[in-house]
Each structure stands twice: as C-alpha cells, then as structure tokens.
Image 1 (tube, rainbow, N blue to C red):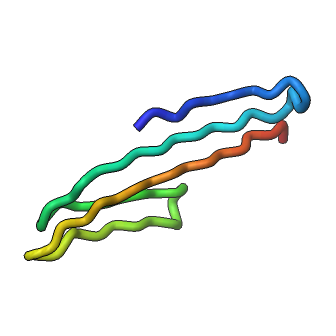
Image 2 (cartoon, rainbow, N blue to C red):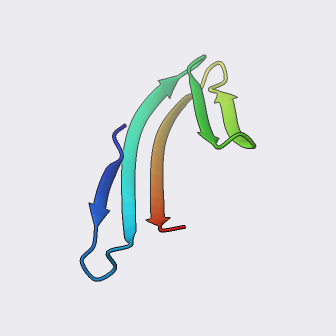
Length: 64
C-alpha cells in the first residue's frame, strides 16, 4: 500500500497523505497495523471464516 502525498497551495505548510488498500483474508491470514510504538492491531482471521478488509490511512503533516 503506497502513501500518496499532496501539498495544497492554500496551506503551503501542510501536506496530506492518503493510502487505501483492500484484501481478502482467509483463515490463518493475519492483519497488522501499527501507529508509532504504542498503538497496534494484530489479529488473525479465525478458522472457517474469511474477511474482506479495507484499510484507509489519512495523515496531515504540519510544520512543527
């Protein structure tokens, strides 16, 4: 999944990033998402099930 960055002319000190991805997971496949060191989703599709997963990430970058 690629993060696409866009700088808007109206707010030159702000850059936004977007990434969206989809996948079909079968039993035993894993789904993992991390945000920094403290926030993590790590789970596995259970036996006999299938998941259709959509992930969307929206990032706003500003000058510190």
